Length: 325
Image (tube, rainbow, N blue to C red; front, side, top):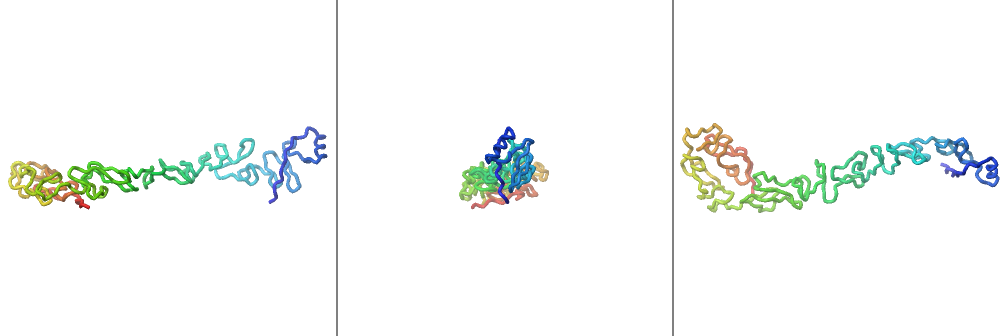
């Protein structure tokens, strides 16, 4: 490709005599603009006169289009168009300004740092994210977890404690024996229910897994229904109902054993009507006394069932107990 000749602009001479005098002393033989609005286009010793709104490209008059805008061979990028700007032609976004970045939705943006157009046009970063080198990232100290639409502080988020999808226990789940559950410095923590403690320092896995009582020591402590002969004052009449006779006992797991208690006379209780009346421990889903923890053991939660004679609880929908870690 031949080098483009340098064009020099001169003020149009006032008269033919002045033009002749310039030629005589060795100055330019042609004025860059003629009286009828043309521009001299010189190439390889030849001159062509072109309209002022065209470019001189290798001796040819070229219209300014998206392929040759402002300079020969200067093509506009996608989403740009060639148009007038400050007395010249330039590649413009739809809003009419030149763009050193990328035209997105008609305006000029920097894809490397724009959170609404990060890396590519219309690629918006999630709430709280920033755009860095064309990638959506969370600020220092925050993490983007899958299926979340915002940046998360895993040092305090109860659903993502320490890392994504690492939830802490639900304090309302009776199996964990907790009154409160939270995430602190990336580790699950909380408050234990009365009579329980977190002996293995792992609240996330099993909560407060260890009872403070000592089943078998003959003392019915918090968390125990009874312990050996210590029935906390209960009897067949108070455990089963007025009119029940027999002997209330305590199981080895410190829960009541009502198998030695009689039922009330049939006229005072009707087993099967779904109402736990005096003389019945339960009737269908109506449970007068006892819990899954008493039926299945420490940590079991849910709803116990009832046997056919309304005299004892069954596993029903009780969950497995939590074994101490």
